[in-house]
Image 1 (cartoon, rainbow, N blue to C red):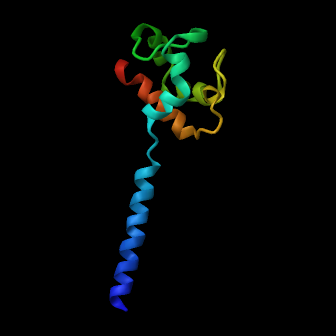
Image 2: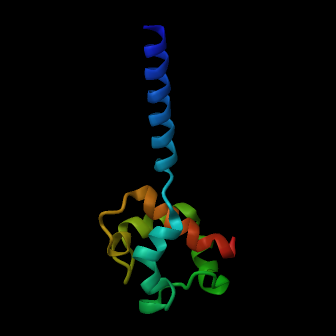
Image 3: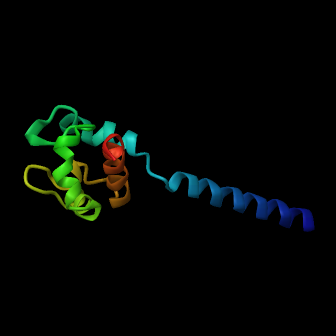
Length: 103
């Protein structure tokens, strides 16, 4: 009985760890899926990933403003870049990925 309890607890802990690992959104994958079409080409005046000059005025407004506009949409950008199935955390991860080269 003690061994069964140990195995059960080990299994539950493993599932919890697996869920925690999966909880981290993959910003690069989300960018490639939902953001790249505009943020690689500059379509609709989207700032291109890695373009410090284009991102500077946006960064001056603060990360919370960037996140808010990415999630809720702003000017030509639709909410969540049109990928409404994304969670807010996934959108934030994509924003973070886009900003890595300029931060």
